Amino acid sequence: MTGYDAWRIATERDVAFADFLTVASAGAGESGAFRLGDGFGVLVLARDPSGDDACVFLSAAVDGVRTCGTHPSRPNVCRVYPMALRDGAIVLRADVVCGDRDWNMAAIDRPAWHAEIARYASDWATYERVVAAWNANGGVDADAFMGYVRSVYDSGFAFRL
Image (cartoon, rainbow, N blue to C red; front, side, top):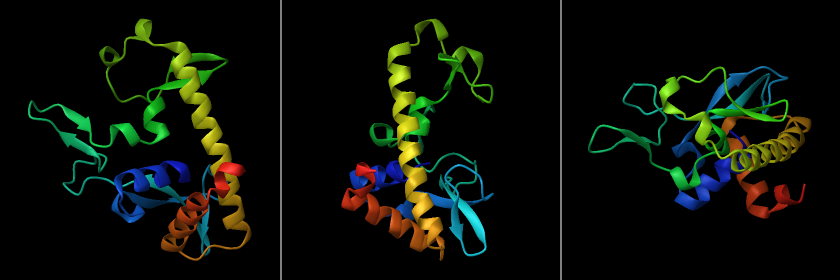
């Protein structure tokens, strides 16, 4: 999850990062890994406290079908799921947990997917620079990092990187 995703969800829903984000342990070279004392972490969507390991935004509809409760402001990783760009072609990711019947590859709007994946890559490139600045100054804790990300995106600085 990028800082822009977190910022966008927080501002559009008027919630704190801690309401929907958590920090997972990461390796120093992992994409989006930010320094936390002697270790590294990455931002991830929190899981529903009900224990079924679903995203905190996943909600059950009346008919039992689960839907995204923040669909208009969902993170870019969700927007591009389950597709990937491989050798210039839009393909179904190998790690998709949905069944083959859930995605009709013939009906995929390839130009739209290309645009979404390009935006996803651009957001990650910007976020990597935001994280690099944090890491260069040493990290304190997850709350400080989330505050830093919020202030960088609130100021508009990240959009000028």
